[in-house]
Length: 211
Image (cartoon, rainbow, N blue to C red; front, side):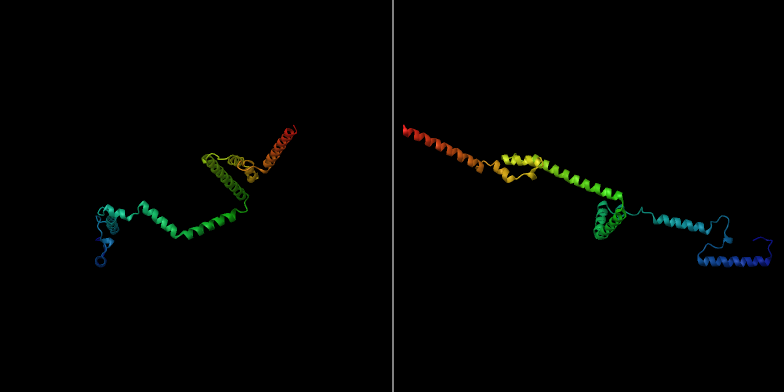
């Protein structure tokens, strides 16, 4: 306080400063700003320093064992298990959301020419894929199949390979190549030939008797 101020002002200012100092001491504060010396730090700086020290102490994990820190975090297997359980528990919700998204997509694209074209292309691709898989399966079966045991079986395989098996009557085909029992047509021929032989023999016998 300068000496040029009147004595009454000086006394009033001194009393005010003393009351302020007493109040700051009771409140635990840093005191009035008028009491700070040039070398003292403001209260806010001291507070910031104290908070920084406290913060440093709170994040200091040097005293904690590594095993205790590791137990806090999930392993990869635990993460996968937790995700799987979560998906199973919320399966209905996810399915409903996927169905809503699919319906919304179809509703917005149903009238689009590009959508119709893509749908046709996808259908064609599915048919071609199924046909190709079927052909590969047949080729693999034919490659691993044992040799045909009969002529009928060999012909059937050839017809299937030529893709005309749907036009063949396999019952008639078996009769044509069946060697165990003669066909009716072959039986008639044999009967006729046998009859001719018998008549020829009888004619020879008559000639011998006439002589």
